[in-house]
Structure formats: C-alpha cells, structure tokens
Length: 97
Image 1 (cartoon, rainbow, N blue to C red):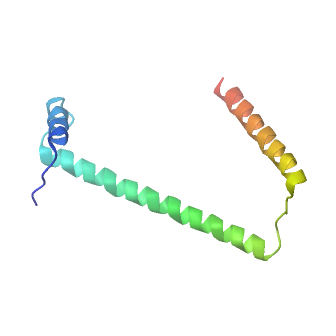
Image 2 (image 1 turned 60 degrees about the vertical axis):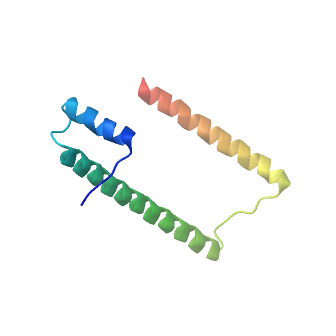
Image 3 (image 1 turned 90 degrees about the vertical axis):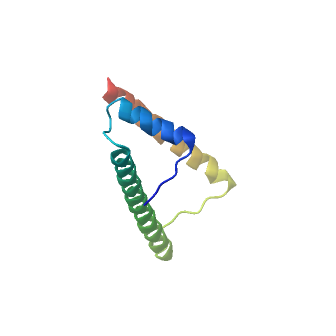
C-alpha cells in the first residue's frame, strides 16, 4: 500500500519521528489507523446509545408517559431546567475543591 500525504502531514510525521515518538513512518501510520479505528468504534457506541434512548422516549410516548406544556407552563419548565443546571454546577464546583 502506498500512501501519499500532503506536505504538512509529511512534516508532522517527520517531526514525530525526530522527537522520538515513533521509529518509522509505518509505525506512525499504524498508530494513526488504530486511533481512527478506535474513534469509529466510540462513535458507533455513542450512536447506538442515542438510538436506545430515542427508543425509550418513543415507548414512553406510546404509553402516554409525557407532560404537555403551553405558553404559561413553558416558563415554569425553563426555570426548573435553569435551577437544576445551577444546582449541578454548584455541586461540581464543591466536588472540585
């Protein structure tokens, strides 16, 4: 297999080799391909998770497990979301200390 890289990526690979991160161009390319494979795997897992969550939501809708909002109750919902978010941020700050 022959790979042609743009000049800036060729330079990047050379720098990685000269800095001691890799011994050869092939080793650098192999590592890049492993990272790409792992990225695709993680992406697929996230996509599968989103699909499962969507299906849970669809099933809840079909069972009537939802709440309807109108113009008046939307303000209440937004305030609840805001309060929950602020509470979580405050908790994260406490945990970070």
